[in-house]
Length: 297
Image 1 (cartoon, rainbow, N blue to C red):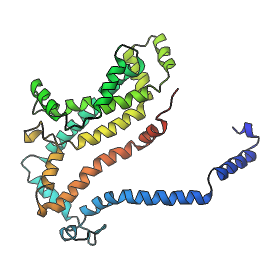
Image 2: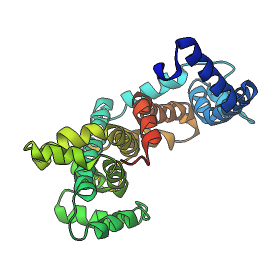
Image 3: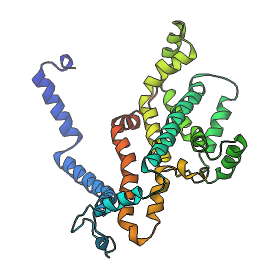
Image 4: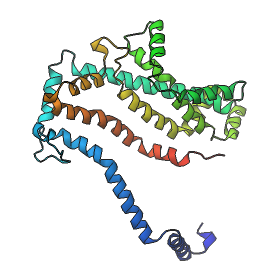
């Protein structure tokens, strides 16, 4: 690029002139102020959740509510600790159940969605378009519509009141298959043909070529599925208290009445904090997904 424009000084002048032509300084300032105001409005609910966890009970019930606590306190955290310590099911058991359900549902969904998307994106076979149209059509149905059929299938399989009753339905969400197929179509067919000429099988191509090239897509899918599974209480399939996840125990505290609203505020913070933390870890890959979506060979 530098050679094309001559020496470095000429190159810098051309770049500055391009920046000046594209957007003025006043335009940049206006844009940043607008984005800052929008960001502040979007951050207010999260700030409110965090500040509520540190408010004493009298400030929680104050009307109109204040955004920040006047007398910050850790009493709500101590109240939640006492509540969980007195629970007849150990707190560590709820955490273990949540890790199994969330981890199993997220990992299984990413693997099954990507394996199903690969032949739809890179293989030509009869009925391919029909299958994909069925997947797209399934996106129109909410989970409440499939709640009864799911329960009947789980009961017929004989896995009701087990971890698998919550994990298995998570494998078949159509959104993951749709997302992975769209990204796999962007991979050039020449790369796959070269791998086949070198003797690579379909599983080797899928695992060593396809999956590394769609890493932003399956990371995004993992974030979405993690959020869904983290909020799953398993109340439809799990009857044994020993199998229920942390979300179920926390929601029982939230619904326990005005006297526990301090602990409920901490519970709300915990429920929101874990998916947000997972999103921050994968944030760069998700942004990459947004910027490369729609690109073709």
